[in-house]
Length: 336
Image (cartoon, rainbow, N blue to C red):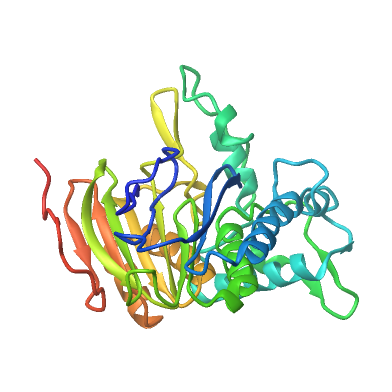
């Protein structure tokens, strides 16, 4: 879902959402850069937090170098290449893989990063800017052998991970949220700050306007139209959407949201799911889970996690969970 800033900054056309204060009310520390194939912005109300902002930016570059499946020399690529044998991993990769196993269990298997073969089979076999948008040839899928992140053998004492030979991992469904949380940990001394990594957001303390950070949730069908506004305070928000990262093969549309139950792109009437949660990692994972489950089951899942969500359906209708605390500004129940 494409959400745009209340301050209307430039968009790279990929970011699911942007969240900024209406008025800056003075100097604010800010860094803008690209990482993980998206625009990232770091802001601190105290403009003197330059060193912390630089350190937080470096975290993004370091994590991308270590976890990108598109870099042959990355730690994740090495793990995928050595499936079937124990592979020594860094404490950071061990942590994120343990987190992935935890969320897999929490979501009943709906969240599963062991979908890399399915992503590649669908045509997402290179960094997205190099994926051909439309081709006449249909996708040819090899015989599928289902895999699960739960099959990983993690040895914390030896700090090794062993994956079955048929299991390969893509961390796109959790890596960005994880990195936002890691950068937020670095920025904690700044107290009042916001991190926006292509729509995975963590907002700490208050903006220069006062209480919290106002957030505009935009229409996935029209990014210049806001559907709702929420205020964040020491919490995160993320959106999962099928409106971006789409490509066509032989007349069939595919997206990067793979349903691990089928190995195919998600196929339901939810175009986007936005979730507010205590951490960016949770918001990231829960938004994807809610989208995959659909409105009814997705809402039940979010309520069970004590989080809130906002769904946009294929007909333009919107649905909010009972705990969603948006103002309702600009909401259209249906589109014409």
